[in-house]
Length: 364
View 1 (tube, rainbow, N blue to C red):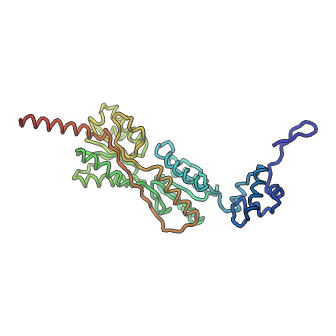
View 2: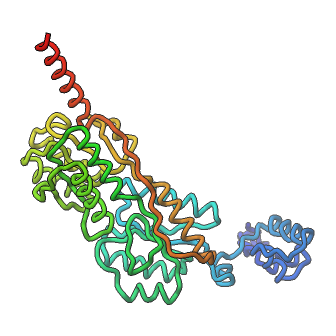
View 3: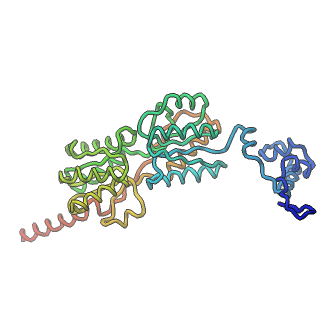
């Protein structure tokens, strides 16, 4: 809002403050503050008068002052290792939607999977007085100083997708062991015998869980574990490409790739050495996206419920912020397999049909 002086110069009016609202509403500053902070002891008529004054004057409360008074900023920090990985935007979306419904906003930080950058952002979020933190832990150990600071501040922290008991037992993860088990079991049921794996880093919990599920499935189906057919990647395209160049010359029947980005790199390597899926190898990837149906062939995938992880982790964090006491919990969300042509079931079915037809002809 602006007025005009007698000499024609414009002058900006000061924005209204809480004292202006109190005068307009014929109420005390303490009453106005109580209405702004949604205290219940203010009567209905007086509350309406204050709200009308706020609306008339266009008063906007000072959020910093409110946070100092309430010891709450109503913000939560979210740290993920790679926002360019299509997995994490859906996790963050789940967190944001859930936080907004409960009156919170989020501050998003991307650690690039680097422990030093992760620690920098943890320090930053602490200094910003966030009410809690959602963290997908990068590979490596967390600085003991930060663990101690978070504990002393009693700053609620919930882990997403990866566990790290040294910091907290509160976590929401997908059941990666079961997801890997289902993926490899499906390849075995299709008829593949020599099954390879492109896994995640073993320095993080879900990388280890996915390898355990792979081994468990091989054992359950009486198949041999061959270390030469297992490659430790880092969930990025380049490591999937390197894995393809290393594994495919050994001619596995099929391969299980432990995330989508590595699958892209793996298929790029297959193209370079002129091998085709599913004619030369079957493939199942971990995590599903709508565009996987558009690949040639469409990719069989085990869906990890990304959005649900973000929602559930945020609900748990906000319950902690609200002081709801309960035992530390690690909540696992179950994956689901979507069967498409890349696993090779179509080729196997047609091959069996031809064999049966030939056997029937010979019998006749």
